[in-house]
Amino acid sequence: METTATTTKPGILSGIQPTSVLTIGNYFGALKNWATMQDEFDAYYMVANLHAQTVKMDPAELRRRSAETFALFLAAGIDPARSTVFVQSHVPEHTQLTWALMCNAYMGELSRMTQFKEKSAKTADNINAGLFTYPVLMAADILVYQAKYIPVGADQKQHVELTRDIAIRFNNMYGETFVIPEPYIPKIGARVMSLQEPEKKMSKSDPNPNGYIRILDEPDVIIKKLKRAVTDSEGEITGNPERAGVYNLLSIYSVCTNGSIEDSVAHFAGKGYGDLKSGVADAIIETLKPIQTEYARVLADKAYLNEMMKRGAERAQATARKTVRKVYHKMGFDT
Ligand code: TRP
Image (spheres, rainbow, N blue to C red):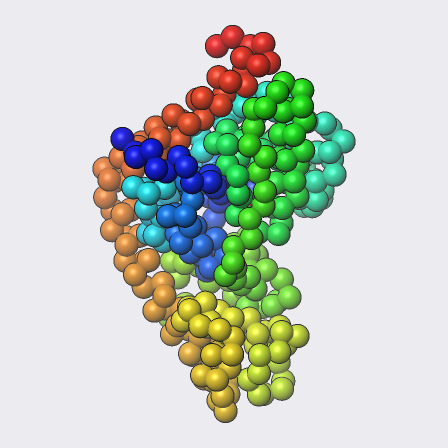
């Protein structure tokens, strides 16, 4: 059993959808930070596979990607001995709590969610109710573990705010039940931008694969994508954030080498864009190498992978069960 010491630390929870193979944006913006937060917090990290089906996905592919994303979490340093790492659908309490919260969430507030508006504009032929109620499932993910801090990117902040509103509303109506969560912006957050459109965040759903680098990309692919990265016509390497392309390359170099932007500028002083691109490619390759090796090892060991998923789910469920019991009882449901 876990020691009781973990329960005195504030809870954190975050999740990533297994819709496609994760990029270095997911690594530097989320996974790397998650790994460093494992000692300070009682951490819950999940593969958000229920969320992924709001956009139609082939079932076999979703199943495979869920396992792969879980393996990638472990390979990126999420330690199942210190953190609760699990697949969302393995813990049915998420959907049980969703119903309870759904009855305390309003159509009006859900209609105001920017992501819903954007996604429904993109997939006009499939505006399913799941797409609309997705933030309530996300609220359940958070509240079911009584998590205090939620590490998320800017695009998910609105959903955490909504979670707060629902939790406060529920507490007012039924008495103290939920910890009120807050979005958590990591101290050393890195926003990795697209290599092709450096004003935009690097995204795993970018239709142009040259815009992103996957955590699992081979060295020759990384070198090729870096060669094609957008810079500018100034020629000189400076740390001016307005020169989005060059700045993005410098900040990727910084996060790979754990240095500052100034360190990176100094490193490339007097050099050209060719050197910058090959230097950044090498730094990325070096950073990803141990993760890729560990990923291959974990994914090949199905017994280990399944055992870790099972244990993670059991551990998550032990906490989630308590919250659902409490909530259902307060609302007048018997279970
Ligand atoms: N909706 C998040 C995303 O698309 C993933 C997610 C699901 C999540 N549940 C969560 C993130 C709970 C933080 C907390 O990125």
